[in-house]
Length: 304
Image (cartoon, rainbow, N blue to C red; front, side, top):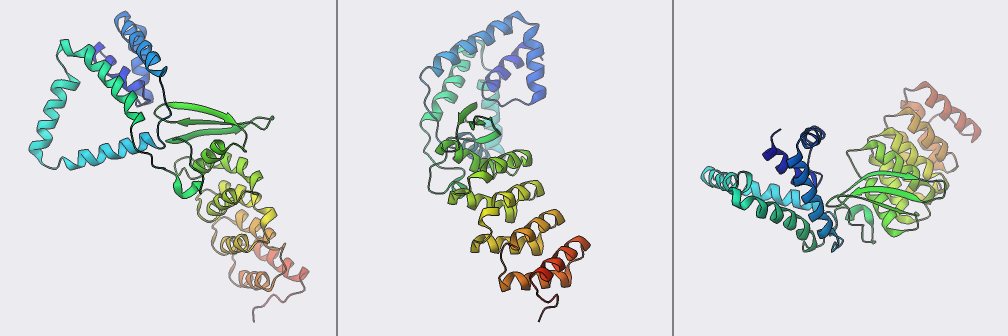
């Protein structure tokens, strides 16, 4: 990596836009280049001054900006327009004249910093957050809990941030609900379910667990959701979800735990479900568990 590339990467690094390999290459270059060390110190000082006037950016800003950028790029459908735009970009942004480079670096930092303050507010996770306004978050990265009951959430806005508080805090709870819907990180969803499962007295949390039980592709997440729904196994909505799981979940362990929760109810619907399960279930343990349950309820193992 040369000095020109390193100084371009410094701008992107401030917004977390570099890959691990790019960050490593930048660090190796800066460590051996006094000029770039001085340049980065200037960026850090400038960012510190800008941060003194920092405001909270709108929810989902980073994801929304990336989406809008992709749309704008797609609109450059004409080859001639794309070529002209590319030439201008290379001439004035990628390889600007020497006299413009200090001003250009400052402008890129300032635009990236202040643009966050004027974008209209829309929620990235509205379908999971319920009536409460979700926290200003592009993506939740990690959640964990301390023995004190405090929950730690590491999340990205325009840059990565951290928030600590109890699950009674609306922002913490909203972020956990957002994390529970993150399709790219099953480990994060498992940790989130482990925290949310003890707070099912809130309807919004129960809805998240029910949604995960029905739809999450990770069996560990579904098991955590089942654990949280134990106290609500007699409620009609939970009963319906359990019946669906028993009939179609592809994990025997999840189906067995769902059967155990269903057996808290001795309703005719449960008897019929177990009889049907005996008729078509291929797993020997589940067949045995269903037969034992029917025997305990003094019900026939045959459907009528």
